[in-house]
Structures are given as structure tokens and as C-alpha cells.
Length: 327
Image 1: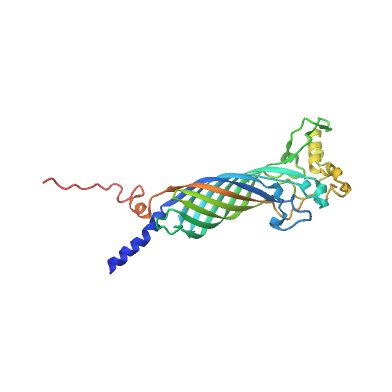
Image 2 (image 1 turned 180 degrees about the horizontal axis):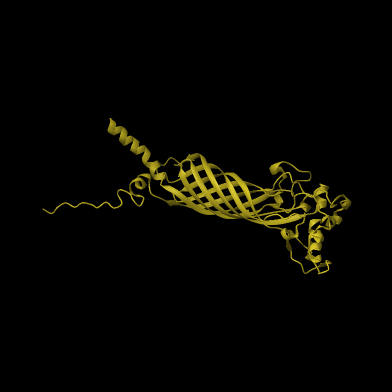
């Protein structure tokens, strides 16, 4: 009876032991991104979370990942991502405070994520083939993020400024770096931190290939992904802080672009005065990515093999096979 029970247990556990040999996988991520900050919303004032997102400003996200399965149901994952986010007040048609402000930005974010994953559902044998070649899993994840960000503003007329601070059309860049201009009189850091949380699913095919989908929301500790946070500064701030006439004039223009909205008929006297609201400092910026993940699974040693043969000082590593005497 004991032998029958032992054989039955081995028969039931063998597929799971074989499946558990796959600890590592790595691959690429490709998908879309959007951001939640001081630019966005529909034709009304601020709305909570994703309701304030502008779908027209959806951009792209690409990256790579390496994942290690510690033990069921826990894994850890490292990611390197390149995420683009953008926004423009001109997309808001009927809400005057945003329309009249007339700001825009684009930001390329280079991000490292360290994530812990909890697999809350797993089917290691899709189709009940008893070969355990195809599998499905679903997980939740959270962790930490460190990223580099640097916002730029769109300059369609390619405005530039001479040494005396006089504006001239032509000669300027199509995209202007906002960070050195200190458009709100604030110097913020380009390297920032965040907390990513997300969810995803994975299909493993023939034990080797993995295709998945994931969505991640990264809450940051900065309010300057879009270079907008608080109030309009004193127009003399830049000269008082040693900016050259050329740079001071450029900073003043990109700080207050409400005059560029005159063609829309917005009452410009309502916007851009010193101390008036330019952004909302009470909520930090965040961004969302959703990607298709394609990876390859690396086969490792089984638990039994590692217990007996792994390690420098394994008891079986230097074992010498005995030979039967010839006589």
C-alpha cells in the first residue's frame, strides 16, 4: 500500500517539478503611455484620476525586462523603459482657464523599475494535455522607480531671442528645453523617484516562449513632468537672478504663453498675472503605461538537482566513482 501511495505521489508531483525548473525569463515591452498632471482633462475643470486623461495625447512606451521566480507565487522583476508623455492646453476646447493658459510639453522618461510580483492565479497546463507545455498566469505587482525626465515645449514659430532680449521669428528650435529656463522660478531635479503599481497576465508557450500584457501606473514624487506646478512668477525674477537678457526673455515667454491664445477669443486679462494659479501643487504628476510583453524562458536545474549537485562544496561535486576490481 505504501509503495502504491509513493508511486501515486511521484506521478502527481513530477509535472510540477518539471514546470518549476523554469526560473528566469527576459524579453521586450512595447505599448502606449499617457500622463496625469496639470495639462489634460475634457472641456471642464479637474477630474479624478483617469477621467482627467487626454486620449489624444497617448504616446509610446518601449523597454526590456528580466524576471526571476523566487518561489511560487513570488517573483521579482527589473525593467528598463523609455516612456514618452505629452500634453497641450489647446486640446481643451471649452474650458477657458486651460485654453487660455495655452501651455504644452513633451517629456521623454528613462526609467528603471524594481518590482515584486504576486501570481494570484496560475494554470500550468492549458488545455489539460498533461504535458505542462502551455500555461497561463495573472499577477499583481508593486515596487520602486528611479527615472530621468526633461520636459520640452513646442515652439512652432521657431521663435528665438537676440542678445538684447528681443524676440524674432525663425532661428529657434522646434522643441525648447524648459528645465534651464525655470519657468516658475523653481529649480527642480531631473532625476526623480516613483512608486509603480500594476497588473498583468502571461501565456507561456511550449515552456519556452512567453507573451503577456501588463498595465502599470507610476506615481511620482515630482510635480514637474510637465514643467507646471504652482503660480506665475514675478516677470522680473529671471533678471534679478542673473539670467542674461536673452535667456530671461525666453524664460518669460515660455512661462506665460497666454497671449498666444488671442485668436481663440479668450479673455487674456484673466490669465498670466504674477501670483495667479498656473498649476496645482497639491497633486504630484503620474503616468500610465500598457504594453505587450514578449519574452523567452530560461530553463534551470530542478530542485532535486540543485539540492544534490549545486554549490562549490556540494557533497557530490567531487565524488569519485568506484570501479570494481578486475579480479
